[in-house]
Length: 284
Image 1 (spheres, rainbow, N blue to C red):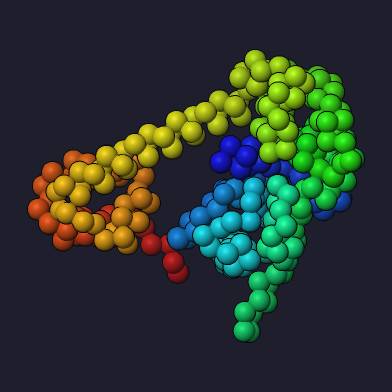
Image 2: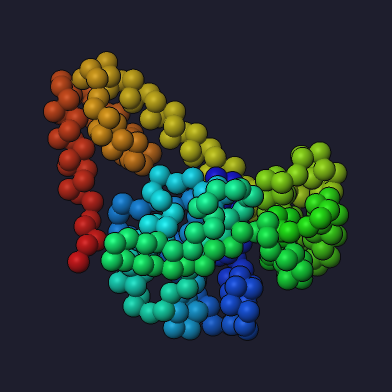
């Protein structure tokens, strides 16, 4: 997840740089839209929507091609939701970070019996590092680009990071570089080229730690509640357990109190049903 959070941070912090890289044109009027759509159910590792003039650039970052919902269908799903909400041209770019021989990373369209949807795919390990090295905002991605000498490439990235004049930006870019470089390089080489204290002082590093702590707290709460429910109402149906796993930390805390009054699984089902009824329906 740290890799996805890093890419998401970069795309939202430097939207113009990503747009100029992917569109190969100078764009200045850019607005970062909300990074998740209201309609459910939809899940993504990392997704960013940039509104540029009268079109939207949808970036999807993937560490691996694995996905509960097939990626090609997810791209179609996002497209239709974006189209309905903003009704403008949409450019979708699916960016794979880590090398793989999976056929999924070479697929650029969703095809069904009477439906065909195309999107752009970038495999970073095939990308020329030159334009990435020339832009401080894209230096983290440069660590994963095409090269015959990975160590020399990382050394060059480190040198370019040191040239960033503004301290906070240098710290944050350095942290992002170190996170993404972890997909390709040994930790010993990374720590040799980058000072650890700079990473620890960065905003993105603190954000990653915070998200990790939140996920840890939710996992602990989830495991405890599932154990309590099993003792209270016996075995829980798989679909009910899956519904519980989608609850927020606050909702889990509320459930932890409510389950003390449960006597059977019907009480649990009714309780979860009431949660669903109180959530706003975003469908037209």
